[in-house]
Length: 149
Image 1 (spheres, rainbow, N blue to C red):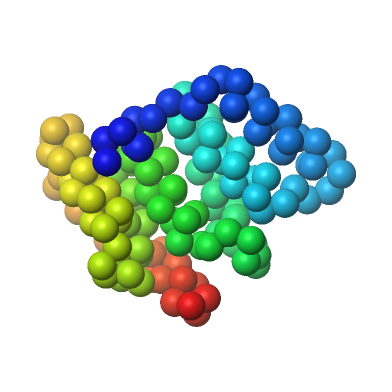
Image 2 (image 1 turned 30 degrees about the horizontal axis):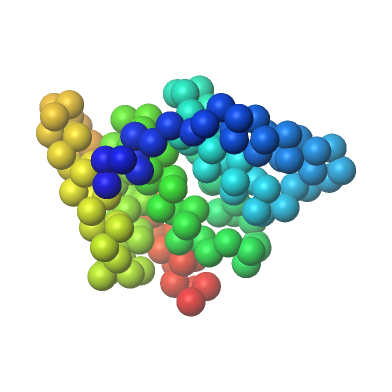
């Protein structure tokens, strides 16, 4: 699980997805696939790019599209927030997945990794407090995920 969170995008791939996204953006709203591929590359890049990837993925969550399952957006948002060391948000997204799919092995492993990193970084207590606020947002996303089943 560490490898997927710490994976770094090939700069050529990032540039290719950036070009596709920019070309589609010039013509109107980019497809969900183009946005997702670009966001996925961004969250595997530097810290500033990770933040932009988070914004794009959150935008996809709000879009009403069936091109890519919303669970994928939620999963990669958890990974992105883990990379950004925003562990409370990462945990809230993982908990959303586990609430919708309690046997999801990837989500279970990601949650364990996040908790391990929180302990390593010494912020477990602070994240629990911040997680309460994130749980409110999470409730809305759980409802959206469950309604799409």
